[in-house]
Length: 350
Ligand code: 13P
Ligand code: SF4
Image (cartoon, rainbow, N blue to C red; front, top):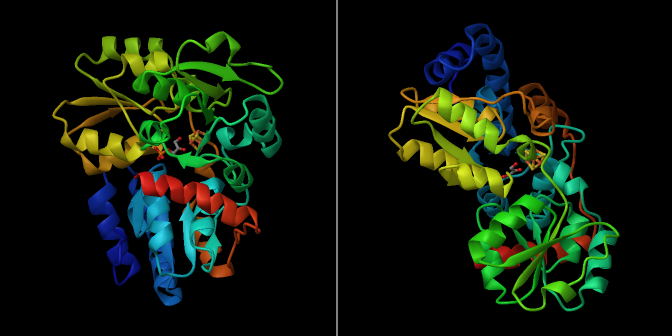
């Protein structure tokens, strides 16, 4: 990775070798031209492409120098010497790259590429929570915008959320904005949780006797749609199926899954497992990427639920971003430095 073949034809043949069983040939032929051109211009410009695990298969296998989950991509973004950094992921991820590596140009191939979790909380909400719960440390999920990151004490990702909460050695802890991730972390760390919302007036008074986490009512518009009933139906149809749920799914769903972890931990789990069928309760493209790598295993896809934001990132737009320097991500001071402090605290935890 990426495909560094010398011609379009050689690029096509390599893509066919990797993807023939998940992408139709007609699409491979067309996309090979884009992949070839992106890699040629990337080399010419000394650029690096970072790709989230949710990118569609031709993009995922064709152009990124590094693929991974939010934590892995943040680490890479912080360390790279390449310029520009093209971030094939959503806006909050590209912002994180800019915060960590401010002298580099960071480009996001789509104009918007938002995230329902990042939209669910504002700086005003965080300030209001600080007033309502004075002195309580605030953890924010990486799926937040830079201004919110700048207001909180530490960031976490799906790969290290429980570790970050434990590292604070505090009680209570505010955890924003994903209600379900907070509930899953509360379960893992043995903390009782209350969920706050805009203007809800939730207080700790009723929870004084036991450790408490204070969550927020943000939801991922993809993962909130999966239900325990989906899992039961698939288990009935595919006996022996292994069910993997991202921790943005509800605790009722993660409770009936066989494994819950970040997108990269899900990839590793399937790689190591021996079963025939897998149900991935996460964005559908990832099942295609895993299927490409594991031709002997079958992915059961629930593809009616898609992330519209991740799906905004295409090969066409990646080429345009590289060619025309679009869309340049900027994070103004002092937000950048304050957000960097919160992210670096997380990176120090691991
Ligand atoms: P990961 O950090 O697990 O890749 O998750 C990012 C995300 O947005 C999942 O919906
Ligand atoms: Fe945000 Fe959910 Fe899309 Fe991930 S899948 S980027 S959490 S909306």
